[in-house]
Length: 167
Image (cartoon, rainbow, N blue to C red; front, top):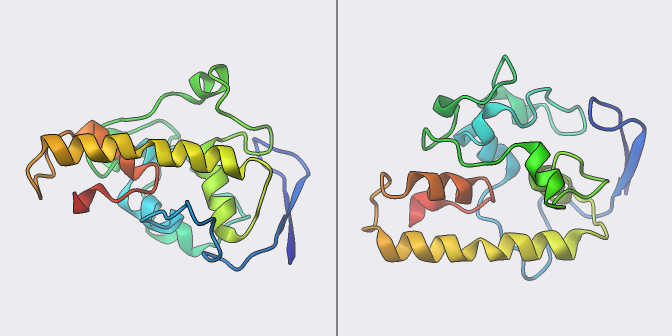
C-alpha cells in the first residue's frame, strides 16, 4: 500500500492510498481497452488534460503524450482531429465531478489504474459502461475499419478508454 499526497493547481494536500497493483484487480464490470498512458499518447481532450504533468503519475506517461503547451485545446492533438468534450465548468454544473477528483473521469481512471479504490468507483464504472451505446452506434452506422465515420463519437469513446480503432 502506498500513500500519495497531491498538491497542484486543482488540489492541495489531498492524500489517498493505492491499495491494488498498478493496472490490476479491476472491478469485474470495468474492462477498459486502453491504459491512461496509451490514451495520452493517442491524443485525448485536445491535449489540455494533464498539461501540467501531475507528479502523482509515472514520468513515462508524459514522454509521448500529446499535450498542449499553451494549455488551450487543439484539435490536431486529438487522435481523430476533432474536439469531443465539454469544458470542465460544464462537467461541474452537471454534477459529474467528485470532490476527490476535481479534474473529472479521466483523473478518476488514472488513479484507479494506479491502484486507488474509492467510494466513487461504482458511479464512475456505471458512467463508463454507459458509453457502450456509442460503441453500438459506431458499429451499427459505420463500415468496419472506416476510421473517418463518426470521428467525434470515436474521439469521445477514446476519451473513455474504449478503443474505437477496432470498430
